[in-house]
Image (cartoon, rainbow over all chains, first blue to last red; front, side, top):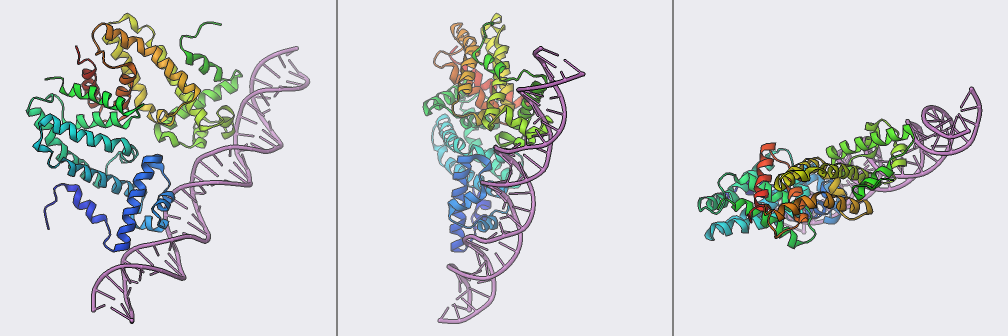
Length: 192
Length: 192
DNA sequence: GTTGAAACGGAGGTATACCTCCGCTACAGT
DNA sequence: ACTGTAGCGGAGGTATACCTCCGTTTCAAC
């Protein structure tokens, strides 16, 4: 067995059933849930999700016994993709590598706000997600700090909250979102 | 009739019924709704709100025919209080007056996130709230800009989004919230 | 104090979501 | 090809929320 780059990836892989039809349904459910949560928030109807996925409601419950389990799987999947995006960025300039990853993070936050909100509070998977996220993005930030590009009196957790908060908000257009995010990042860089 | 300081205050006053028992119930409903929305989000049960207020469900519907109407009234009430807080702040230093008001704004946002979210989209009252908010806080910001305390390449709308986004997020503790908000405000002040 | 009107409460009809149960289907190992 | 089993769908019971209707209560003007 190969070493997993992030604690979350093994968990994500273990969830997916092996039989062909079951795996297909599992994927369809995850995709449908992602869409439904983005559209209707955390209270999206589970029956609607099953309908979107083209499977029976029982199939949803077999794969995800609780609403929370479904949340966790959707969230873990997203985080895993995000972690993998961080690999390879370390070849770039410290500050540019960091903002590039934060940009990806922002894109993920803006649509997934509902899921994150519902996961407020702790769980094993959520904890693994946090760790993976910090393992992926933390080094990028600390490298920027060492290079003198980012201020020293804050940590990576502060940065994620900052970006998460801003990107979870609805803006009039993408230009405003980028402008506001830029202002905040000027604050991160302010001690230059 | 005296001139109303902000467009929202007349609307707020007009909503409240005049008969004693009706006014009492109206106030109780608003308070209960504020609490319920903060606790359960935009999907809080209307019957639960009526129960908290100690009134029948019919009384709720008589005062607020739709869920949206209830949202609007709660929101308008909050905004009105916030606007009144801005009056008198202009005697202070430009930057300090601005951050002082933003602090009040942040305190309001952090608990009322659900209401604001549900009001995304336009309505007459929401529009009046926006205008009042801008009329109350905008001058504080522009004064800070003229004094060279705030950067010129942004507007008051950008600032509100910035603060609203950050404060709507859950932080581990108040210290982190203040630290992150401070970083963001450093960005606002960066062009000094 | 009388009285008319405004306001009240909560029962109950309707809709919708949750979740379980069970007879049927399709996969995969031999 | 056969066959055991893992997986499937959706009907239907249960719970909950929405909202209306109407007999009763409370206010306030006179």
